[in-house]
Amino acid sequence: MLARSQIFLLVALGVSLGVSAFSRGFNPYFLDIAVTCGINITLAVSLNLINGFTGQFSLGHAGFMAIGAYTAAMITTTLGQKLLPLVGGQTWILFPLALYAGGLSASIAGLLVGVPSLRLKGDYLAIVTLGFGEIIRVIIQNIDVVGGARGLTGIPDYATLFWTFGLAAITVYTVWALVHSTYGRGFIAVNDDEIAAEAMGINATRYKITAFVVGAFFAGLAGGVYAHFKQYIAPQGFGFDRSIEIVVMVILGGMGNNLGVIIAAVLLTILTESLRKFGDYRMIVYSLMIIILMITRPQGLFTWRGRKRKPA
Amino acid sequence: MARQETEARLTMAALLELNQVTIRFGGLTAVSELTTQVGDRELVGLIGPNGAGKTTVFNLITGVYQPTSGAITFGGKSIVGRKPYQITGCRIARTFQNIRLFPSLTVFDNVRVAFHLHVKHDAVHSLTRFRTFHSEEKQIAEQTMELLEIFNLGKFRDEPAKSLPYGNQRCLEIVRALATKPKLLLLDEPAAGMNPTEKMELTKLIRFIKDKFQIAVLLVEHDMQVVMGICERIAVLDYGVKIAEGTPTEVRANPKVIEAYLGEEAVKHA
Image 1 (cartoon, rainbow over the protein chains, first blue to last red):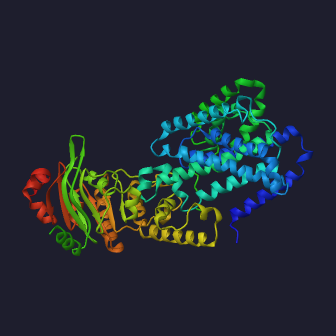
Image 2: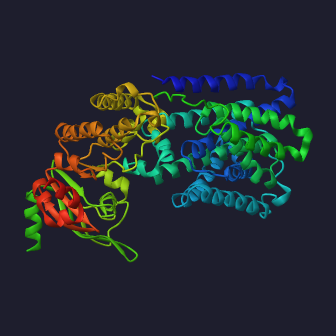
Image 3: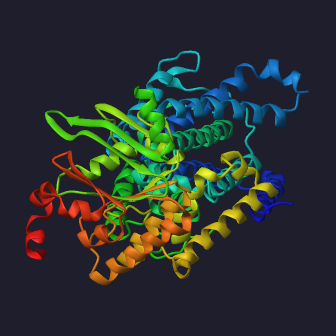
């Protein structure tokens, strides 16, 4: 027997596969925005596990994304020709394997960042994760094999609507299913009151690291999909502002509110597109939005006070 | 010789034992060579004036602080050096002086999360959601509701914990601690901020919990009425030193205690 949530997941996967089959006929501009939406949903929902549910303010999500993107892209571009015959020339086998490798390396990085989070809280943790993201970017910038500052080109265009939204669906399901269980309520308990959580026998350390590892894993996958959609990645694309963009989606949607975060991810992606004519002033609009939001709706646009959390 | 002594104490069914426990914060000795014990299913009170080190003793038992010297054993095993969540795993649960619920979680979830220790499933099971996961979740939900109903909190089930009235929050915190299935319950000033009627109810509640769940209770309290009314044995701390221990009547008559703590009140009663 499948749980209702699992049926939702399968339906979502089916729909993305179905829509993807017709995507050749879509307007490329529209397709670009749709895929960006999907990637942003994955990024925002995975960050929501770390920032929203577990309350570990991380500013390094773009760093995890970069690791996933570069790992997956290096596998398909440099090793692709050797690996393809092994999987019978089928890109639909090679691609998820490359994505998985990207996710895995990102989650190892998540583990490394998760460890300092045991000792650090709030702003201090935010600064460490911010530093981590920048370190990743600078390291990549200085590795010639991956193109350095010029970026990595010639990445095959494996990512379709199916991969993008399939991944988004799996991410949403994973975060939802994790949190909606007696085990998963521990994430929120750690966020609410760490001392009380420990007094209830909850190993807060373990929960925090789990959140970082899982969140980083999906950010890595999203990075892989991003790389194989844009076919070009450069370190500048994974900078501090990218991390902030994702954090804004989580805050705008409401920390720990998956549906809100999904809506916010879509809205902000579209907004970014419509603000493109302002060019570099975009960040000003962003900052203004956060300020206004924090003053008027600190709980997020899509979280209503007194909203009852349904028991799982 | 020493071994014989400990064995003798064990047969007396001492659940929690503190032996010469000392903790210093810099130059300040907060608790000095405290030796006391809590027997199985015993209701012990720990009293003392402000700053006597009562809460520090709680924090030592629950692993928040590590003693500078001395031994703490629970059920015959040393629990020094263990982390707070591991101590809860040893079946010691606590409440806090200033209520620490999970404010954004519902009343139901506050208690459910405390069943955490007795849940077999983990992250992977939460994802696969096989039948065993659902049956276990159902079982936990039933146990949670059962506990909530015992304490008349069932009607608040889906309310966020922060929206409960103060007295109910206190009660919920105790319920949540009970959900970890403790053998020893540590209550840190449960009567703080309560009116006389609420205090009466609390006294009944503590006695009820002790009988119903067959557990030992260690109570830190300011309120003499509550402590004298229910405790079988009382230890008195003053400036981190135990100055008296005994039954409520003994403690009440102890001149040291009267001097340090009960002074005015005892004079009035006399």
